[in-house]
Amino acid sequence: MKIKLSIILSILIFVNGCANSENINGFWSGSMEMNGKTIDISIDLISKDKFFSSYDLMLLEQPISNLTIKNGNISFSIILDVEVVFNGTISGKEITGTATINGGPPNMNIIFSVTKQTEKPVKPYSVESITIKSNDVSLSAEIYTPHTKGQHPAIVLLHGSSTNLKSDYIFDADFFAKLGFEVLIFDKRGNGKSTGNYYASSYDDLITDAIVCLETMNKRESVNKYKIGLWGFSQGAMLLPKIVSKTSIPKFLIAKSPEIISVTDAAAFSDSLRILNSGGSELNGQIVAESHRIVEKMIIEGKSFIEVETFIQQNAQQNNFMNQTGLYGNINIDKNEFNGFYWQGRKEHFISLWESINIPTLVLFGDRDSFVNAEKNISILKSLNNENFEIKLFPNANHNLKKSFNPTIDTEFDWPRIIEGYSEYVEKWIKSEIEK
Image (cartoon, rainbow, N blue to C red):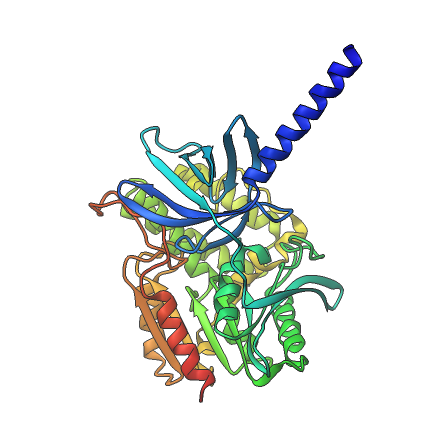
């Protein structure tokens, strides 16, 4: 009798599990709202890997973790800059609930609601996984190919210094693929599934990787070789002029939030701004900027990693606020990484390379960028009188060209959504270039 009862219970548990699975499996879309401001969201519970997406937040196919479904309730989390935890109730074809940000203010009231769709939206492109050899490194890449017939224009996407995975650029790849481009994204060397040592790599190594990716696209029969471009964000945008000085493949460039002068200037600006925003004095901000310039000078003069490390440590002892910057007191510089881009890259200056660009180039900035001095960079670019440049500054936009919310000056909250007009502006510009 006990055996039969055990079998019956097992069957009931199995059936109940299948019912819950069937109920939740699917593609769900809806919205998330806080303080009257709404953004789109979708939850893909069909795929083997579960994903969260929001076009408003410029996020596509971000992995869902800690998924739990029990007694009509669902919970899961996603990692953005912070962990966001969702808790909801399943009611037929609708899930409603709340979201909390780990470490965020306790009074945040975020609600969400999604509805199960009859089918998952079909993408107008396919995605192919490939491996690209770049000297002794293997780059894990994906190529997005539109379903339209004939040859396509193409674009290679280059990373920022800390967003190094191809998954960080799914939104951008999707955007260009839907415009009819073949798009190549890849894990930066030493990241994701790509081999190599990222921090021991030089800018020339990263440039070599970009060029082999361009060559890969240039060899594809489905690509129009006269309509291949490069898109770069932050570090990738900064390197664009040096890349096109070494290859003739790109016929246009899109630079999103580039540093025009040097990485030292970017570090001096961003760290000084951080000190000022935290209540530090203007003098403290000047000391921070000057500290970065001293480090650059030491590296140019050939000082050792120990000498640079000693200066940074002693400087932070004298000026405690330096511990809020990239030149903090307990820093330990790795000998191999000292030869990489993070330190040796401070010797590189780019203005003359920007001046030499001879192909159409769209340069995009946000006026609330906290990593590069947009106003200064725009002024320099305009002074070069290069007719190939089109420069666009987006008001209230941050480094990633998302809407910036600053409670000290903004009277109304909003999400860090894609800045208004960005997609339309880029689409209009790039279409005009490939139609020439």
